[in-house]
Length: 180
Image (cartoon, rainbow, N blue to C red; front, side, top):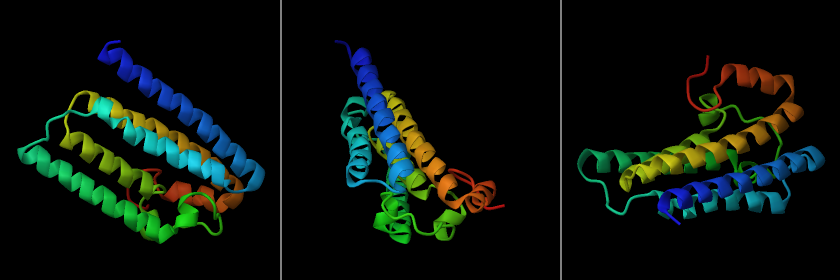
């Protein structure tokens, strides 16, 4: 099997698994009002799977010069912001098992999904560190998976917080921007 077919097949398989997992996530939110331990584990597993398959998409040579600097900057900034966002939200809320109170302060004033944005920046940094054209597919794979997760979560947050969440969405962008 050639590399193109393998890479596209793996990406397709990961997306199909992500669709199944995030359907279950949406069902858990609807049925229980939060994620079950199994759904939380599956959600984490999808992101781990996306990271594990990076070997198919990333190059084998380290970037050099300005590209290396940019890659390391993206990685460090992304992972730092991810840690700050998860710390500010709390682990139970970060994995969908605590739905008390709408978080709209700190990083959540600028983006409704700082963890997704931060991890995306780290994924971009990693793809730049080991550059390859296939890295764009890997970044796209992350974007699809993250988008599916955000859709499942936003539907639930609209259900729980109603008008308050609608107002929050009107004021704060889904991914990147400034509060109006």
